[in-house]
Image 1 (spheres, rainbow, N blue to C red):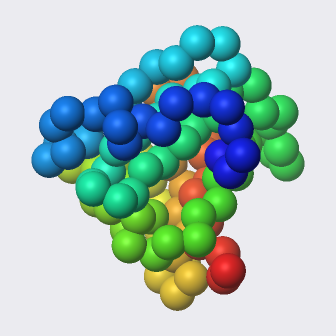
Image 2: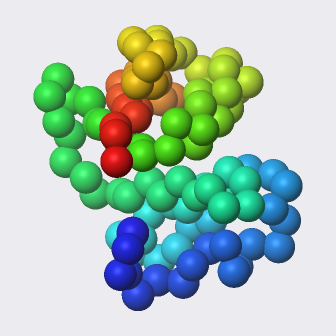
Length: 105
C-alpha cells in the first residue's frame, strides 16, 4: 500500500526467483513476491462482499496472469470469467470464493 509505514518486502527478500509469502505483524496481511518488481499484498480483515465473496483488484495484467498460473499449478478450483480484462474466481481451502479482477489504471 502506498504511504504505509511497513517495511518494503522487496528489501527483505533475498530469493527473488521464487514466489513466497511473508507474514508481518497484525493487520499488515501477506506479501507475495511474484517477481523482481511485482508484489501481491493480501490484506486481512476485509469485509466479505456480495454473496459472501471477497474481491481483489489489480492494475497489472501480467501480475494477475501470474496469480492465475499459480492457481492452475496448485490445482485449485477456479473459473475464468473474462480474459480482457482478466477476471477470475478462485475457491480457497475453506470453500470461500475469491474474485480477482484486472482494472484499468
